[in-house]
Image (tube, helix red, strand yellow):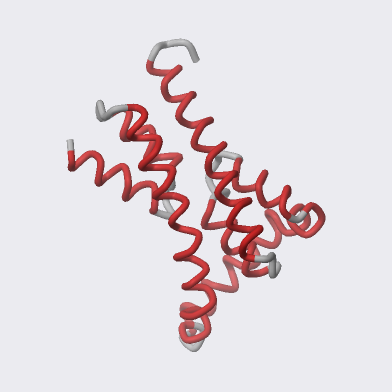
Length: 152
């Protein structure tokens, strides 16, 4: 049980899955559905301050390395193409909707990068990311539960 909780939390903080993978993993592992939702949601919310710290403090030092710089430029271009116009035009609501959509490539990691690139105020961005993560988590949670019951 503890192992499954840890794995669900790790999926929720991972850029490869976030809560979109952590929640189904936890539920399908037989964990309490409410515990899974709360732990995966808060784990995913924790990513925003960690990413902002990384982007503001560590990014400038790591840009000295060619491999990192090329990777960072690639990610920045994708973020600008994928969400740039919506976030710049709609600000808070654009960021919230972008993070809320539970598909690959959207989520708190992309939202944090967009916050950094488009110089969105951190307090507003944190709220937008948190609300977006909440709705995304609810969508994934409900869909997983309905699928397990054979309804969806």
